[in-house]
Image (cartoon, rainbow over all chains, first blue to last red):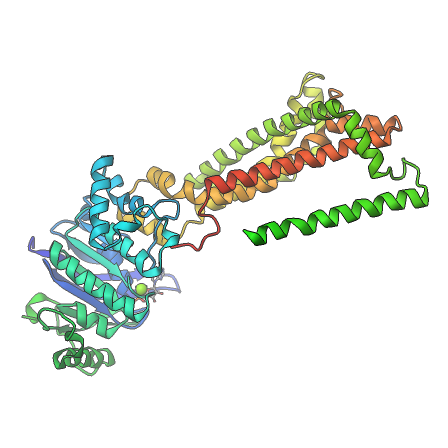
Length: 270
Length: 256
Ligand SMILES: Nc1ncnc2c1ncn2[C@@H]1O[C@H](COP(=O)(O)OP(=O)(O)O)[C@@H](O)[C@H]1O
Ligand SMILES: [Mg+2]
């Protein structure tokens, strides 16, 4: 199992179990994410995408099932800063400069001052914001704030990135630029990514595999493998891209062949 | 910046018009000072007794500052305890509301009897009680009303509750604290002044206003009222200045 970034097996999450407002957010979800792999979760609102991500991140416990992250329990992975997380909101701290926001994970991981400053500047250079290190978050545009949040999520050089609609609030142009940037960074750092999105083209453009979920109860219905090779300016206009977009759309409508027993295992894609 | 300058003139103009109308009313209607003294009389009394005025104002201001400090420290500490320890939470909020409902007018003579008659302590305590509630309520809100996404971020980084308090809750509470302080600071001056009406040393604005009025020195009584207004305004403006300096991000669009 140590070759997997994320391994989840038979995961259930039932909120308010036994009460009359009981919600089955995840029902028998199984998913594997390989090292260096980019996997997107897509599906209508309320199908449990955020819940799955939060179970993986050990922000909430699963009701049933087992999860491992980077070969250890989610709790250990969290304690060892083995994953980085980014949300739809940049969630920057307004009272800190941009650089000190990026330093936050390093501060909590006990790095000393000079080392974390150097690392933060290096990360800001990676997201091309080195000139804004001493600015305050509110002085930045939404896209720039989100880049800071991504730099922060990469601070401890985690093996895994967990991202919950990080580009959801951005305009289309910024969004495409950010997608390229994220691909470049995750490739350069060898980071595995689990990426929640509402956008079919976004999922297809970014991913090795697109995991399609459906609500009530939240479950995985399809896994669409995407093989577009190296992404470039032409990728979004290629036939292969449109074919994959169509495949995901069909899956979302419930028309394609659903995954069989065992869920979204790696084996089915290769 | 220009709009700020323009915003200063209307209230000054209004105040000037008001004083003129007041002066005219007193002169034309030939009002006796016990009914309403003319602004000119108040002003000359103020200037001729300037050092006494300052001394008296300073005494009340000192009481107010001491009470403000005590009430603020208590408010902050108890808000932190209430946020941190679940058992205290449901206990503390009714207690705080109870303290807010304390009739200070009734409590002052009682406290005066408990302490030395020449002591400032009862007045400081009264002021602290009045100050406590707005500080406690606002700081508690600031410590607890933290965006959920930031709490999740902290958890994803394995931050301990103590770290979350230091890194997230306290800075988050700062603008809330100043909202409370802007209410509490002028209130402290009023509380200190009111407490002086009910016995104790014959010092301070409250005592002097009462004794001047009793001695039919109406111009002087009103001059002390002017000092009280100046002290109250000064407290408010100092708070405003502190707020600007320490929480430059307050009121900005949140990036969260
Ligand atoms: N803390 C919670 N308590 C109760 N129900 C929840 C909670 N979090 C999520 N849910 C419910 O679980 C379901 C899945 O939510 P979520 O994972 O946020 O969906 P998505 O991210 O796909 O939009 C929804 O019906 C939502 O209302
Ligand atoms: Mg969601």
